[in-house]
Length: 139
Image (cartoon, rainbow, N blue to C red):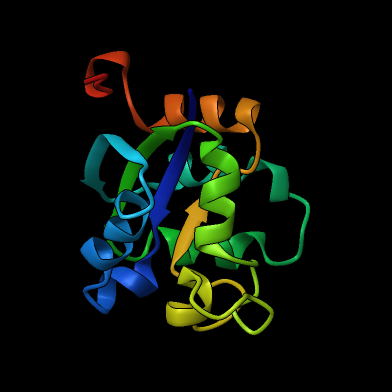
């Protein structure tokens, strides 16, 4: 069973979309195994987005992700990453398929409402950044 980290980003939080977005994953048969609301600090944001450190948008991304509380969740299921990719849509909301989270709620390429893990290894690394083993449930 695959697992995937989902982050509800500040733009979605400001528009009260957290539960609307989370319900999209559950309605597609994925099981929520962890959930928390937190305010990312710079250290956590920089570790999470370390792959983008050298990119020109890195500082703006860190500032954005630390601007308001976010919701972090773990969803699990068979082929969870593939299902979640289809539910979330392309990074750029303009290029995302109709009916995807980013097309329906995203404002631009940064403020695209949700982050998702993109590979099994990435998912496990990202999940460990946000959750301890005791905070993840198997039921």
